[in-house]
Length: 279
Image 1 (cartoon, rainbow, N blue to C red):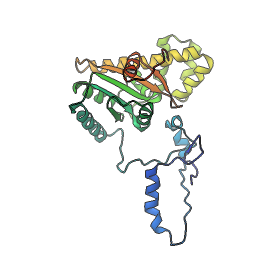
Image 2 (spheres, rainbow, N blue to C red; image 1 turned 90 degrees about the horizontal axis):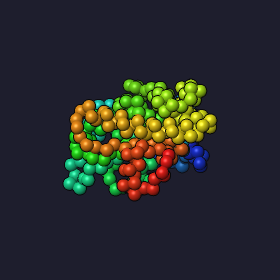
Image 3 (cartoon, one colour; image 1 turned 180 degrees about the vertical axis):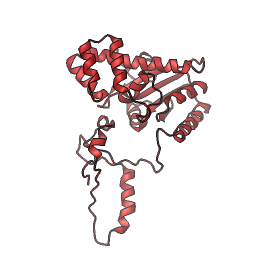
Image 4 (spheres, rainbow, N blue to C red; image 1 turned 60 degrees about the horizontal axis):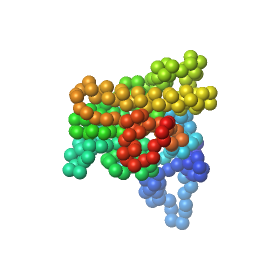
């Protein structure tokens, strides 16, 4: 049973736990239970509810705490050089495949990977990446990728809109500062810009803006998606003259595809998805 700080699925109220985590608990505890007896186990994360506020759990339906995940036996540290090397190797393998057509989707994290699969995108390779976005973009261009889609949570990719290409929060944050700068560039009124700067999270900033001026919110969403595409192209141009079309696709805390950049929109149309005229 889920105790303090353990997340629950908002729709059902059930504890949020993966099959791997369940199997791990059973494997380690079953042999300790005497014959004919049963065990009631309560899992507690003392600071789980507070720590969950720093994650995007809520956007995937997990509320009130942290999920019990453990989806794989090998821990991956998304900011480590080892993780970068693993992803670079996976990228090289994809691009060296004889059937590779020059298109790939970079998804930010496991949650983004799940959402891409739910959308039914299966016509090109999908690579889950960590926080080393800059080197991976350059490596993709070097490997011959012609069309690349960045698919991720807006609270992560907003950093890229500000020219930050290592996105782990321990190294670089500035999310609200980037969002505020984009609002200035978009010409939003000063009172709305101040409102954005005082928000605690990017999601909260957009929610409060949508309540006051939904049109301004839509403009800011698009400005962010467009800036991600422009900043990514500029980053690659520092290292070479490859021709690569980088598009952006952003989802929000409701787990909805919320905004596309102009190139991202073209990519999704190529993948057979129906795209709204405007976001």
